[in-house]
Amino acid sequence: MKVLSAILLFVCCSLTTLGNDSLRVVLQAMPSDTNKVWTYRELAFSFLETNPDSALVYALKGIELSQKLSFQNGLVKSHLVAGYAHEYKNNLNEALKHHFQALELSKDAGDEQMTCSIYNILGFAYYFQGDLANALTYSSKAELLCGKIGDQEAYGQALNNIGVIFKADGKYKEAGETYRKSIRVKESQKDSSGLANSWYNLALTESYQGNEAESIDAFNKARDLYYQLGDSANVISVLLGYGQTFCHFDRYSEALDVLSEAMSYEKYLSKSMRYLIVSYYAQALRFTGQPDDAIRLLNSIYPDIKDSDRYELLRMVELEMASSLVKLKRFEEAIPHYDRMLAVTDTLNNAEKRDVLQELQTQYQTKEKEATIALQQQDIEFQKRQKLFLSIAVILAASLLVFALFFIRNKIRTNRVLDSQKKVIEGALQDKELLLREIHHRVKNNLQVVSSLLNLQSRSIEDADAQDAMLESRNRVQAMALIHESLYSHDDLRDIQASTYIERLCSNIFNSYKIDPDKIALSTKIDPLKLDIDETVPLGLIINELITNAVKYAFMENGGAIHIALSAQNNLVVLSVADNGVGYAEGAKPGFGTRLINSFAKKLKAEVSVFNNNGTTVTIMFPSKEKSAYPQV
Image (cartoon, rainbow, N blue to C red; front, top):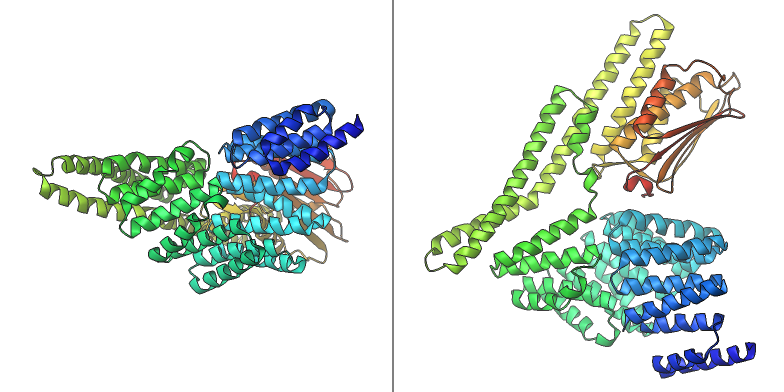
């Protein structure tokens, strides 16, 4: 039987070149062993481009047979190809399910090299879904694991993926640095294909930063490498990159030329690549006065993607459809596309974090904050009225087109109003960001005033315990002030970089108590997480209490060490503060600081654990919100 299986597998591999029909004929004669699993997988791969439904059928057969045979390796590979089939069908959520099953199986088997590859696969799948937080999480996991096991090829791919994610998130400086690191790795490996990919992505990043010459130079290097490799599929990618860059610099006629050349490689075009080329081609057509052609081209792909979860692509296509229809003054048809574009944008954004004003109102109840919040709420209502007015104006414009002979003057006036409203909408986001930045600045300044008042008051107090209490109160105020300083002084007005905030918080505490770092050593291991203000305020105050307690009570004259760790594990944020001091006295009555910690932990819905072993270790675990569960760089 083993000989027969080997012969059939050899024949199967030979017949692959003859076509899928021959492969299916051989499959019927094969015994149900591991060779048949690989044949199912081979068939599934062969159908991915042309018939993803058939690819999925054979992948599922491979999964079923692998389970019966307890064939772990075949089960992992079959789940992966099933995930790819769902990706080609634009069912990214289903694809992720199969990829995660493959990941768990790979981890159980202790196969670190396969685990590293699957992390890369998950990172890219989340990227196509528009979930940049998860994309960065799994690509970063791939970078760490691949570096650890020395898999340079997968390590270079992880770096490239991280650069792509930074680029999509608008962090072009970080993306460029990551691509250059990837280029150095791939040059050392003499990986021409990977090197070409990194030059290509660096070219796009330079384009988004406005560096036109650097962008074209990087594209030329990528193109030359792909030509040397005879890689027509990726030559298409470079042509698409040229097209994107030319569109970015308003060189639409040149964009049409290179994108038209890309379309000529029809037999090498995957569906996803064709969708992107069509999107940018339509944009160039619109700006060169050909909106009718743009709409016809977009309609050729719209049925395939309108119900998919490729949100970034769908947002771009909906926007181009709406813009081209407006260009043709077909306003009534444009409205549904514009609304769907807004809905997709809402899906990509974190809806729970939009109303920063409400968060501020919850934290601070002063009159100044209430007045500022009221102003922002008025601004939001004004934007809603603008959107309503724009919708009404569009409907009126459509009606005026029907009755143009009777209302020609009103139509011209309405068109002018529409242009004005478009400019207002484009500026609204910038205005809101400026207002939020000013709010955080004022909150920080007010807290600094409170801190200064406490400092002045403490100078007139002679009682040591009272002075200590004033110092602790001042440190708590400073912990909150640091949060708002972080928010207004960085590009991201909604989230706080945990590592930067905690390091500055610990530095403030050590300075307040005049701690000699040679006597009490502080070490940290902070994952690059982003936390929102609702999480950071109680977490920062908890850390303040724990560090204060340690430096005051934990150590004898010889000093000691404090270690702080913060990480994300299975949708939980885990904080650990440990010292090697004298430990806590069991049964002691909890003080004010302990009561504060328990109160803030309750706000976070956190579990608090205290261990007394060679010092004291306090662990806080709380369920995270969407972004905070995933590392950010």
